[in-house]
Length: 518
Image 1 (cartoon, rainbow, N blue to C red):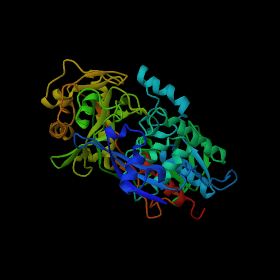
Image 2 (image 1 turned 135 degrees about the vertical axis):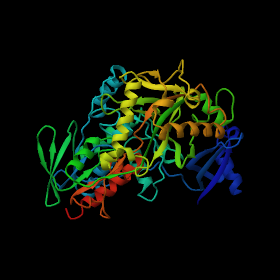
Image 3 (image 1 turned 90 degrees about the horizontal axis):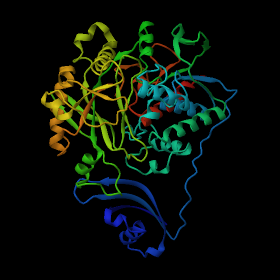
Image 4 (image 1 turned 90 degrees about the vertical axis):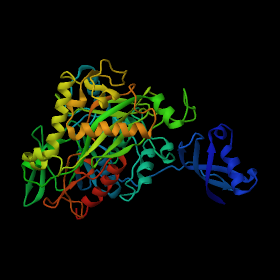
């Protein structure tokens, strides 16, 4: 017999051996000797009160053998001689589109402008140390996409878009820890995700798929409103009648290309702001109601904040406990920051994007001359401003949090995890009023919600501008572009996802759609 129950465990109880068996026996009113095993199905932390509770959902096996860990299998087929689907981009959407194609019996041919994860590391080092951005290989472009080196957070609210459990099991199949199947807010970590991505690549190649790195798409051949071929930067032309466009939210050249070819794209709302960095112990003390070090049974504390300011949302984005701030520019002469955490989340700092909603229709009237690309141009201008304010390198403009809110230039800055370095700058006056004034009020409100959050020990670093694409590529009910037969906009770049899991699910959906009638 197997019973699924909920258990509430205190930190003191968590220290005891076999506590789940003991608590399960009490709750089910049975002898603990009758329990042959307890399998954790879900685990979360309730830290709303001083007495912290660990919530468990468990399966209790009563006089029945506990099954061995599931060996997840997927129905991958040899597709080396099958009909092909071309996939542009090898981030989460592209990877899962390729895996899905193989399961369905079709050959994925992946074209990725960036490098594989091993070679990509050298380009990341060049950004951090030499302040040079390889425009095809950076924190956004390359094998695994932006997620590979920016944390690997797997939390999603997109539960209706596909089978989330299947996405997680596939990651476990390719080397991720089983813990992601249990944690309420699962996370792989930037130090472990590259290996998972490499294993996905090996699977695709093993079953006859193709992956071409350093292969940049520069044009499409369209005839009679049907996709006919793909043009590469090296001059090669590939015949293609099914193309999944999974290029991510930072592939601006694709938006310019589609616009130039009069293929419909649309302006969409997005968000921009700054990244705030606190010493991790401050966030721990606020969230866990502790002084000094947190209980070793607890992970580095995180937070989620939101506040309405002048009819726009101001909210935390991609919060990275025990993490690092990284340079996420995709071109020289721009500064963009993002965050990441290693699997242990054991760095001394906590960082999070704090961003402001930007309504494409109401907030960008001064940019109407750029039409559907107005949000993109606004985004670019802010990144160029950050580049200039930081000293015309990957050094980022920064300010103490309290100085930003109070309108003072910071004489000194706090220590930081941002490797290229920080330069004091008056972000309170440099940021557009649309963003800056709302951020200042938002931070004050956050200080009321989290006592101790509003502190001179925190820095704000500019700019956090790549939360999502300011452009979307429309598609119909068949997930195909409404004007171009055979073109399937996909993932974050199309405007249909907002993270690793939702992008992966969208990649699978687009693969299923692309093979129809092939």
